[in-house]
Length: 332
Image (spheres, rainbow, N blue to C red):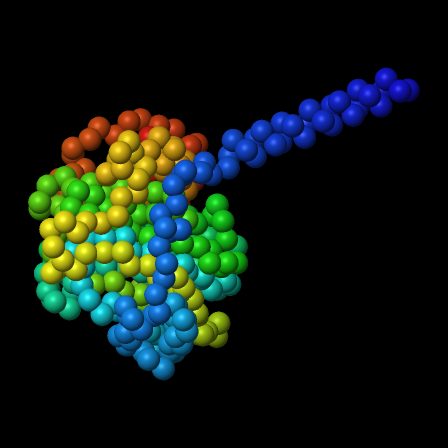
């Protein structure tokens, strides 16, 4: 009888160990470097001002709460433009039914260059209960987002935010923009790198920093299948710890964007740990890449022809309706 108990205990211990190994192996690898911890947020009104929907905005300390209802959304804008830098915000999203609603943190010069603007987006696409938020990252260059339906040339890469709950607490989202690349980060983990392939495919003019919440029912959730339902309003987005470490257009040439300090000697290179963390996110949580969309005219995005996309199995990707898939080792 004692031997039976010993065997059963050993089997249980082995099963527990296996579960721990599987959990560990599936856990997000740490990036090893945490740029958001290197900076301190300043009072909101020192760097930002209301842009629209002031009655749907509440400011306190280093952050702002903005909301959308049937009458209006809200947005804010940095007081100055920047030519490069690190731009971050801790954001807490609304739980429950948020279909059709977009919360955005982005860079743009649309007001300075109407009809011919640049933009770098982090957009949180609202969802229905039981389904994750989608984080859409995007880059527009010199009017490629101003052409109207059928003529807009974006460079969208989308992720399901399902390796944590973005509605339960604040998480840090950031854009690093320098003359050579744009890197999107979530909780200091690089999730996408957009390099400067050429002068024609990279934003170089100064941009302002924006935050907003608005109704995009026509396309935000399952291509407009689910629309904003104002019975669940107000839809609230909370921003805190807004971090701007950037160079203004008038800054001397020695001013440059902070390094992620991941590679040897700093600079633009990511460390092996950062690369591994980025591959983990892309392998398990990326659900769309513009270069792999067969419906796109890739003559308009020449960088898509610069690399050979390796073969892969669909079992390695989580899919969402009407989207293409992404190879395991792609890091663009």
